[in-house]
Image 1: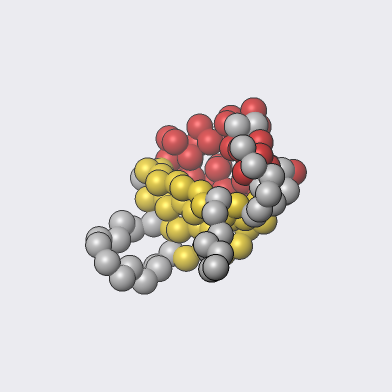
Image 2: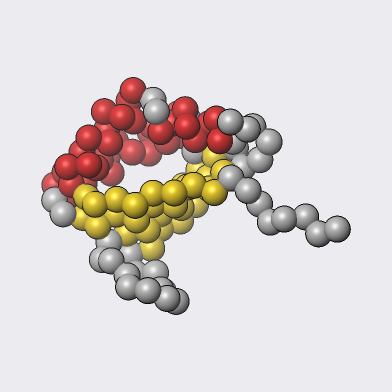
Length: 104
């Protein structure tokens, strides 16, 4: 893993069980902050330029490094909270490590 640059995490949640998702939401921010994550934005109706859009919420989070992101993702407190997300949503999550290529 690399500590060289910021990492952006994007997830899309299709909520199947609103009560379980609310439990996840309530516990989310304290754990994110404890791991240095910054919540950048969310959208409940993003514009899809190509392909089909699933109902739900898309979020973007930033960490200072891949190590910081994985420290959050793999932490015992987040793994325990994520059980509610797993039970209450269908989730697609990715992260981006690389910035724009340098031009030479």
